[in-house]
Structures are given as C-alpha cells and as structure tokens.
Image (cartoon, rainbow, N blue to C red; front, side, top):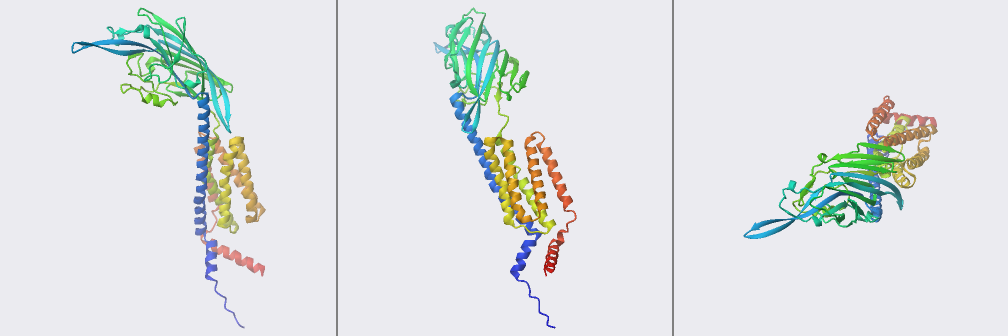
Length: 479
C-alpha cells in the first residue's frame, strides 16, 4: 500500500489563513477602521459649524435691514459749565459738562415678535413700543463742588442712548414738564452714549424738578437691554414670544412665562450699581451688553472709567437649535460605530463566520452618512423627524446589506433590534440635557455588562483551533 505524502500548505495560503483567523489582526483592523471613519465624521462636524455660521450670517443680514439687538441707556441730562482760573496773571476759561441721572425712571415696554424667513433659516424679530418716564431733580452743582462755576442753563440737553439707530421707525419726542420737544439724532456725549437721540431742554437755576415722558417705537432682533440709570428704576416688559432668556446683572423680581408670551418686572436701586447719580466730565462709561457699536466705545477718552456691567434685558431665543443637536449627535459617532462593529465581531466569534474588513468599512460609511442625512433633513423637517427618517434609512440599508453576510435570518433580526436600541438610546440622550451624562454613563455600563456576559464562555485562546475543527468537520461531512 503506497501512502502518498500530504503536501505541505502553501506559505501564502498559510499567511492568508492566519490573517483571516487571527483575533489580534481582526481587533487591530477594526480599531484602525474606527479611527479612519472618524475623519469623515470630523468633516461632517465642520459642515455643521459652517451651516451654523451661515445661519448667523443670515440673521445679521436680516437684522441690519430691520434693526439689530437693541440697548437703551438713559435718559441722561447734561449741563455745560465754565470754570475760571488765574495763570500768569491771565484768566483762563475751561468748559466742562456735568451729568445728572433721573431721580426715578420707569420703563414700560411691549414687544411684538415676527418671524422672517431667509432661504431656509428663520430669524426672530420684534417691534418694541417703549415709554421712558420719570423725574429729574433740580441739578445740584454744589454737591459737585462747583458753586462758583458759570453754569449755562440754556444749553442743557437730554439724551437717550440707542444702540441701533436704524431700528427707530417713528419720530422721537419728549414731554418735558408739559412741553413737547422733538429729539434729534446724536447725543452730544459720545464718550457716554455713542449713539442715540437728544434734545435741548429748558432748565432754570431756581427749578424744583422736571418730569419727562419719552415714547419710542423701536425695531430690533433677538435681544433688548436697558441701563437702570434711575435712583429708583422700574422696568415692566411684556411680549407675545414664548421663550425668553433673561440676561444681565439683574434677574426679574417677577416673571410669568406661558405658551402665549411672557411678562417680567425689575426693581433696581442706585445702590445696586457702581456709578453715581451725578458727576462731571467724562469719568463714567456704561458697560455694554453684547450688541454692536464697540468701536465708538473704544474712542472714548482715557479718563473714562467703565464700571461693572449693570444692564439688564431679555433675549428672544429659539428653543429648538437644530445645529446644536446635530453637533451633539455627531459627537456620539464613535460610540455608535464602536458598538456596531463590536456586534459584528461577536457574530464572527460566536457564529464561526468571517466578515471582511472591507465589509466593516462599508457598514461604517453607512453609519457616517447617517449624520449627513440628519443635518440636511433637519434643516427642512425639524430634528426629531429628521432623526427618525435618517435612522430608519441607515438601519434598513445596513440590515439589507448584512443579510448577504450573515446568511441567517435570525441574526439579521438580532442586528436590527440592536441597531434600533442603539439609535433609540442616542436619541434619548439628545433629549436629556441636564441628565445626558448620567444616562449615557449608565447606558455604556449596561452595554459593557452585556458584552462581558455574552463573552464569558468564549475560549479566546482556542478560537483559531475551533475554527479549524469546524472547517475540518464541514469538509468531512461534505466528503
């Protein structure tokens, strides 16, 4: 009986088989693919930022035409005076200004919102009907140590700072102790109020007090702020916008927010601020809210002191920020890709099947394209609807493709259930803002526990040997 020698395997076949069955190579290739797939994910996050910046650009363009975020400061009463000094036998005259703030100030405002659409973006605008009223006491120059100064009562001027002059839609008039005066553009005190309106007002040296009322109709966008310049300041705002964000140094003492709008009231005393009720020369500058006009502030004199911010106001926010949710969703990409690849890896290990790295790559690209679909659809359908549509399309594509790889219908249904669970879990995390970290930590812990439980009986050292035995058994059964 002649026994033919068993030919030794081809070295290339041996290497190919080792690469195919090696657990280390499989894990390294999966980890490498995960890192590679982070590159298109980073590109999608850049695209989200670009779209968000485009939205902000559109808001600025619409705001410039309608009126930007508005800040109202004042009113401020200024009275010029002249002091005289002797130098080398000559009398020198110096002209100065004294500034006085109202003894009481009440602001009554009603904001009506509008939604303007530019391209695919919505911009929140408002039209504010404001009334500034109160009283100025007789200017006290003795308290400023200016008893001997030559006071120019006839040149007194009342000014109101308005950050966005393009938003003024009606003539501004002041009722000054029963006398109606038209206010003009420019404040005459650019160091204190860079932009606004002003009017000369009659003062007399023996006056006792002056009441004022200034109605202003103002267009703006997104936010409105006030400087509480009164010795006692009361601000009462109402609006039909349902999502306000109160900002600044003071929160409302009372507020009521509902689906039909909000109302808010502030009470601020002069003791709550860092600047006085009266001063001379340009020694005070109001700290500015986050609206434009910064360049004019920088042009103020070197003597000017900017006190701590004491403004207050409200921002009309859009509660659903699609781009913020898209950004948060894209940050979970490595979790979704990792869990999905881990699922395929366990199919290989427990079911003794082989999945090529290229197939892993195609599945990973499908998981990445999900975020591109989500971004594009959310701009038109809203985030929740877009998430449902994108997740359904992605899961369907992956399961359809995996049916040819897994070849067992039960495994495809298991894959479908796991992908639905993963995307459902991520969606819940996106809805939870305050508890997202807690829920995410618990979810990852449970996923790790499930992996440890499923792999507790796997003989990792004999995976290759078991694969050879399974292959030999299948070959014997075939013969």
